[in-house]
Image 1: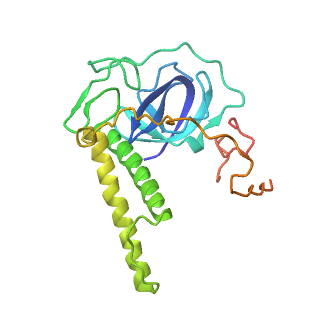
Image 2 (image 1 turned 30 degrees about the vertical axis):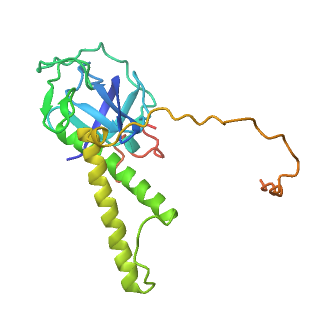
Image 3 (image 1 turned 180 degrees about the vertical axis):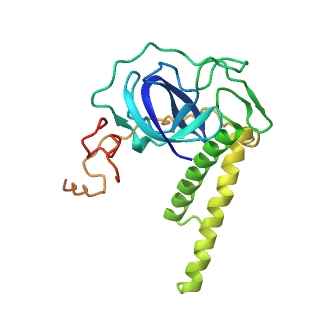
Length: 244
């Protein structure tokens, strides 16, 4: 169920990592109730794109609660208050959990034990980590298949009729699925480190004396290239309401 969240940005959290050789940063925020000064109990997760907000901003956005700890916020719905009220004194939400400090909130969150991903800190769940890793693995698989197709390195059906097109479609999707699973478990288990040896540093320096420069190298010089329904005060950004 989607809800509307309004208040001051109390704190923004960043969590970074690497999956399939790609760096990522996930963002979340705590919101302070504008009337009571209490921090709302949920951590609002904005995904991998930095949200258009900073600490102290009076904002409004849509979010969908995931459980009693976190909600998935929609960055595209973030609006800033035109005439924000006076910010009340901050009252931090007391944490009910124990465990190690860290994660989204920096303290109070329990560490989740996962057979596949190891220790998961903060307010992430095993499903959160699985979704992020699967998404990154899918992106890597698509990029790999694209490169293979561009270099004619992926065996494909050659028939030009509709039957051949349908078969190539299935073949491409099959390769993407297989590579997605491979990259997912490579990242989750680190197994690729056990099966692929590190060649170490390779000496690529030139041996012997270099030839003298010559204008006539047998090649021609290349040519240079040419360069809403009701006016409730919380409508879209085009409306003259309290938010923009």
